[in-house]
Length: 231
Image 1 (cartoon, rainbow, N blue to C red):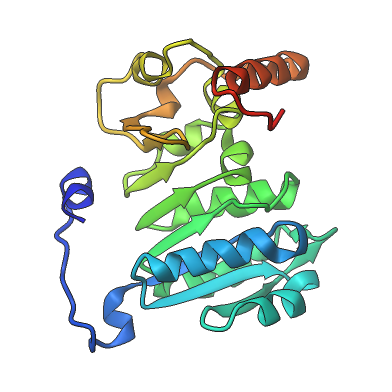
Image 2: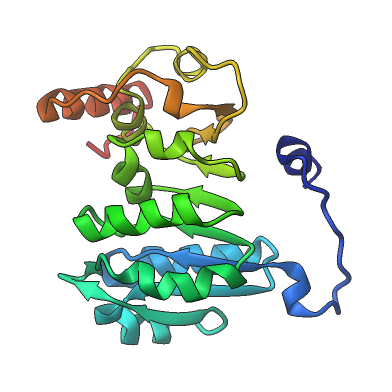
């Protein structure tokens, strides 16, 4: 908590075990995933981190599944198109987000126009902390200008396959790649994995490669350096 407070210049308030739930923070999670697994785990993780209230927004088609999977988070059905968030999800977010202290968006939400519009709306309109993960990162990988406009705390957590899509570069020394052309306060970037330090400003890294085959090659090479097999 102390480290996060120093990073963002925000004081951390300690609350007793019997403090009112809303005093511990309200978090909105927008996630999906096959069978609702990613969204359920993400929402429960937000609760375990100490959040008092967690609101889990999912496409309407999996609302019934998600409502059974989780007990404590409040599950909210969102506009749905082909099993993913529809573009008009932002109309519902206009009512939800002003009540939230933080938003986490991305796990399992897929890639579509609705996904992009939803992520874009959150980054441009939500004035507090945002955590961008998985497909949330993929949604803005070719639109990093959206990140440049963020003035509130923003954290991106790509794994070894998502990082090249976001940054358009690859290096054997990933820490050096992360820090290249980075010298001022921007969104925090943390590569998923053990002993991965935070760093700043994926928006300042080189433009994303537009060649899809080369993107796949970069992602596969990145995974090989980590001895993983996700690609």
